[in-house]
Length: 164
Image (cartoon, rainbow, N blue to C red; front, side, top):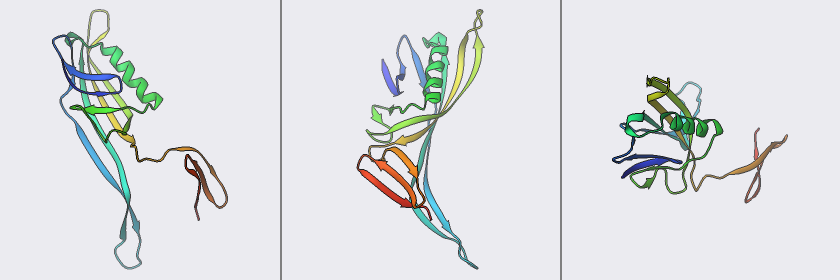
């Protein structure tokens, strides 16, 4: 068995009994850039930090290659609809680092062929993922809006940021 990677409990692999893999991997990264307007001149740009990293993976599921097509679709849709934080691995490495967690932003399914019972035997699934958290990402347990600003409770304590 050759394990190519995984997303949560869904393993991308090739073996004599099962082929569940993808043929393409598109990754995009962005920066958060602010723009300050200057009267009569060009705006001044400001780097505010890293933006979101996104990955798009088209996957073909084929029952003749050992895949439970509807079962895999069900798992992926559940991950998306429940907003589960998932580990994403490729070639034995965590994508985004060891503490990275990914969310499925969308799952698009195109069922291509059906058997005599009306069950999908071939489906193309497009997975759109976003990097949700790394080990350095702060987590908020709760937040409240006050007149003075936004009061956030973190594990480290209470911080207030003015919203003026």
